[in-house]
Length: 109
Length: 111
Image 1 (tube, rainbow over the protein chains, first blue to last red):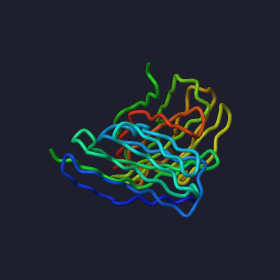
Image 2: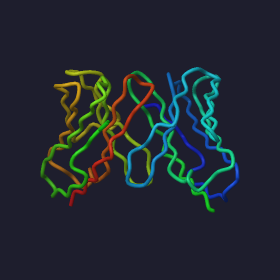
Image 3: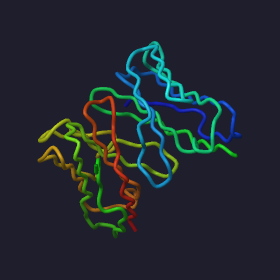
Image 4: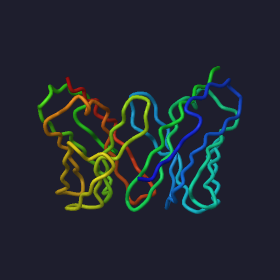
């Protein structure tokens, strides 16, 4: 089993602050995805990173895949209340996905 | 554009009963997955399929069965329901292992 550890588990910040969420493993993945999940709904795909060292930007969100394809980070600049939700990372290996336990983000106005 | 649909949305089962959770996708995706999500946790893979007629076990397959007779449908069968199967179940599909599109989930309680 490929384990993915996410940190922090919980994050409560004020609107306008920056934050980084980490997703770490001792295993290599062929790709890594980040999802956001709202209460009572299914996860929604934010981004997929495939190449070691890859950096992708989605408006105020920056995603990075580690050089060795074992870890990833999600950085949010100037967080807004609309960013509130559960952020999940998922690594893909041999047709399977392995999810981290998630980071619950609360952005206060 | 329906995407991934799941039925039912909610269900309460008594211990020992059986049921089938339905999942249908209209995106012609080959890959389909079933997950369970316990409160405050990430998702655990139950079963997956890379195409019609092909299924394989994930991390937590015990107590469940699947079939994949068509590209569109991937039902999950629970036999002899147990309280440990109380969870939210999500179905997902994707073109390859670069993406997954999730359904809205089925909230199951076994009492």
